Length: 170
Image 1 (cartoon, rainbow, N blue to C red):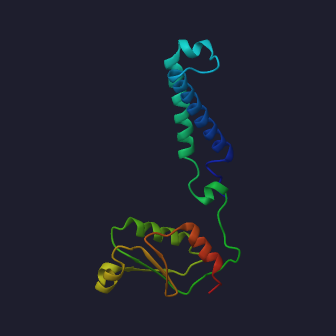
Image 2: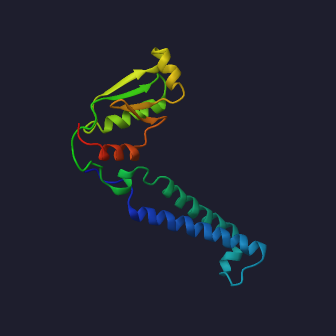
């Protein structure tokens, strides 16, 4: 099992740094506008620019840590997903696509990563057939499983997993 590149402590650290930096910047703004109801340390007033720079740096770094955090369910949970019942679902899987469509490429790549659960992908170029082009022109990729259209425009990994989990073995 691959080790996750991002763990819960890093999420906490990023959140803490972002909040602390933002709070220091908010205090500086409050101090400039009406004055704080409590006394700040002496260096706060003597080294104001440095304090603001450090606060901004801490907030920016915290935001950077959070921005580069987990993006998929697998990264968040640190494990790869497997259906409760292994085996193939569906008898046919057709992807209607066109050349140069990055969403089509992403959809096919995602579907291929679930090849243990899905039949081989049959890719059909809609530009080769005027009827298909008229039907799916602005909706590619279109994913059809056993004659039923399941996805249009993009393939949601979460919905694909739910579809696999909820479909009986073929």
